[in-house]
Every structure is written in C-alpha cells, then in structure tokens.
Amino acid sequence: AQTVTQSQPEMSVQEAETVTLSCTYDTSESDYYLFWYKQPPSRQMILVIRQEAYKQQNATENRFSVNFQKAAKSFSLKISDSQLGDAAMYFCAYRGGTASKLTFGTGTRLQVTL
Amino acid sequence: EAQVTQNPRYLITVTGKKLTVTCSQNMNHEYMSWYRQDPGLGLRQIYYSMNVEVTDKGDVPEGYKVSRKEKRNFPLILESPSPNQTSLYFCASSRYGLNTEAFFGQGTRLTVV
Image 1 (spheres, each protein chain N blue to C red):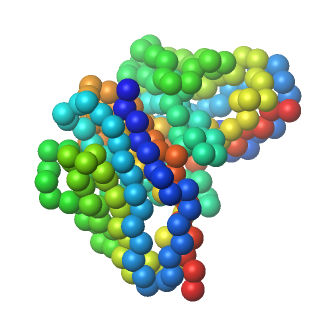
Image 2: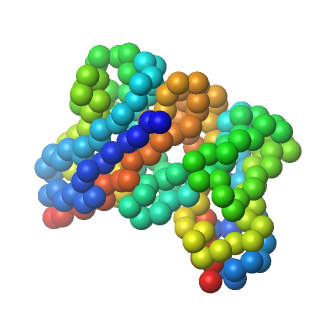
C-alpha cells in the first residue's frame, strides 16, 4: 500500500521569507502524480501544485515550487516570499496506478509571522 | 461555476440516529469519493464511486454507506452514528485519471454525542 509521510506537524516562517515543507512517500508503482493541497481556516481544500513522476523538471506555480527527488521518494514544497495568506494546513497527496484515489499525509500546519 | 456542494456544513447528532450528508457536483465527473479528516491522521478515504451504480470501499468504510443513483450525487449515510465518527468530512469529485484535479466540497463538521 502507498503511504505518504509528513514529518513536520508545524512550521513557522516570517513574512517575505522562504519555507520548505517536507513530504516523503512509498510506492512500488511506476506511474503516479504527487500533489500539494492547502487548507486555510475556511476548511476549503485548494490545489497548490502537482507533479508527474515521469517529469524530471520540478513543477512551479508562482511563489510555490517543488523539489521532486524520485529516487529518494521525496516531494518537498517551497514557498517563497511568504505572505500572511499562506498560513494554512498543507497536505501532501499521492495518486497512482489505476486508481483515482488520493492518499494524503498527516499535514503540516504553517504559521506566518510578521 | 464548477463546484462540489455538501450539506450540512455543521451537524450535531445523538448516537444511533441515522443521518445523511449530501454531496452534489456540477462538473459531470465520473469519480466521486468521501474522506474523513482527523487531527494527526490527515484525510482518509471512506468510500468511492467510479460511476453511477459503481461504488467500493476505501480505507475506513466501517459504519458508513453510500449510493450513486445519479452521476451528480453521492450521499454519505451513517445508519447508526457513534462518537468515534465525530470528524470533518469531505466529498470530492474528479474526472477519472491520475493527473486530474480533485474538487472538494466545503466540508461537514459532524459531532456525535
């Protein structure tokens, strides 16, 4: 079974600084996607970024980028120029094989301070 | 506007009283699923459906039922709720495929006393 591990329950970053959230996963499948979701206090789940396992180039969406290390099964999220609105719970998720099921990590709560 | 609508957003009920949480999507998605979110455990899949009349168990199906009579609707049924089902519930829908974006409802905060 696939597993997703987020080892940082909480992180803190100062406004305008950069922070990296860690995620590792375990799978025996060759074709899969990885996702980062943001959950602000409103509880809405918002897709931040996605990465295909076959693509070596790391995905980037504005201030959000990933460091995808396939051999190490690592998928970290970097947030640059952090803003107060980035404060949220962040979930790493995996989808692979023939399923559309998302397997989530336990989440990292990000606090942004002035 | 593309959306997944869940109702109710908040619900307090008593042990054993049957309840239904509704979920509806307007994107003609084939795949729908229910997750529960608990502190320290992330989101775990309860049930999923690949299309009308096709449903299957996820990772934590005990105590739940679902049905998919129409493509747009995927209700979650708790026939005899217990306190350990107190949780935050999310419905999600997507097209079938690895890279498709999953759209989530607003969440239902359920408390069983």
